[in-house]
Image (cartoon, each protein chain N blue to C red):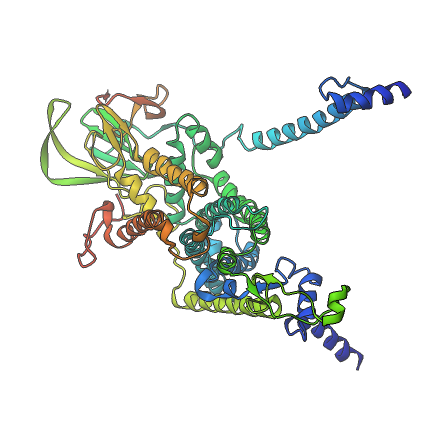
Length: 441
Length: 183
């Protein structure tokens, strides 16, 4: 029948590229298919490997897609109003069919994305993948900077996201967050006023953060991500291929019979012997369709399943409704900001009669310095071509260790915040019981 | 027109700077400038519209009741985040917002009054304020002594309303630490 036939045709159109019958067909699939257009025609086996890139960038994109899909549905259910935000989230959790799953997936994917994007950065640093290899017109340092902006945007997306339920976590996070902004010299007060849309945390504040969360920040991620991916292609693919190219020794290729117009060729029936590098040769590369596609689908599937399973295991919490009078005790930020909470606590400095608030040092200066260092680093790093695209290259030993130490320090602060801080931000061992704290005045 | 083409195109190659301003290039600059000015104006008005001109926030100056009706000792005004103290006939008000990052500090009564020296003066401290967010601690009259808080808790001015005799707090005007309103 006509319907089944056209359905089959449509199915073939959608799927044939993933099981091409020849290399040419595989190449055509990449060129003709808009969705596959950012893939190279052929991809090196090294960049497909699991233990080089760990596919962290792909995973973070899949998580972003989960966030977009669940987020758009949540937009139909959530009301960004101070009076109704909390109860609409409660409705999503307890009344809407599968609402808990939707919100849980959105929250879990957000947590995973922060972690995965962070580890993606760690991977890129430790493999020296922000360094240019041999490709003409490559600008990997720029892509590293774009990546850092994407990491910050991811954190801002998480921050603006957990403000929306308007529970205690949200309210006190805005209080602390915007007071950190206030600690900035000169522009602080105006910045806080602008962020809050007034002097108090109110409807203006909620709608501002809502618009940032559902429109502005996702747009920034989409635009920068597209550019990030395009740059990867322009920079000659993953850095591991640059390293592979260095390793190639020119080798003699057996003479092959081919068309020739020279007299010598006609008499011998062969071309001349050539020295050739093997970079783009058959033995190192495979067609992107189906090999790259197959892996991307696998990574997508696994990421989805992992998010789904984790969502079912860990239910999304919702704290008490926002209450300006009572600050929760202890009031803890989500894990990815706990290191900041720790350093704003311990960095208030007294110089004589003058006191500098920890908010300025730990909340603005220290993160600012870390950020500036990260942006400057690709231009500072003068290690050789041999350390591009290799895990723990010998030449980059010291800088890798410094980087790992900074990351480890951040993680240690997170662990201290999570497990060792109790009421009034006092230090408690995990086996020590916390004292009972009255909730009210 | 003919004249311009002959001399103009030659001087373009020879010396770019000495190219005479023609009507076309002037209009080009004018057009481009117009577009840029338009964009800048559009950007500015978009930004400016986000800075509110009118706020519907609760007033900073408000009545809190007749002095006689206030309980002896401490009263916490939840929605204002304000501790109001009554000691016989004198009154004073201390903000509950921590000076570090603005969390609400908790009033905690000490089992044994503490003897401490604040600014060279020995004082008896019957209670303290503790902040749940980052662990700052303040003595009874608001002086910070532990944790990251950089300043003492804010004191606010109290007045008596002339029309009905109620206490009025003005959270927009700070007061000294020894401010007392005696009624």
